[in-house]
Image (cartoon, rainbow, N blue to C red; front, side, top):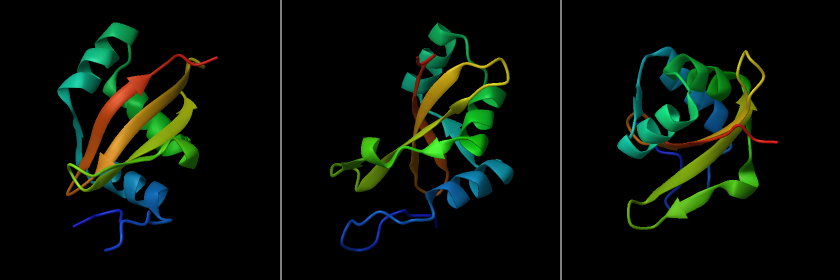
Length: 105
């Protein structure tokens, strides 16, 4: 299982590797809220995957969700058409796309 915290709740430094691995193995799920935001902002799943694979981790935007005992991670990158985008994900047994923000300026 791919949990991204240690027993004391500290973030793992291997988040991007885990994200890329989960996408590569097809273990990605878009949550209802994220699907709504993607439709509203005209993003496709391949574009979201592109941002996650080619983007960078915005450590300062990560948050720990105590109710679910999981970190959410903010990844920022660009789509092929140049839209700067932030994708927030959580990692459990799969990659959960929590929300999509963009285009950013």
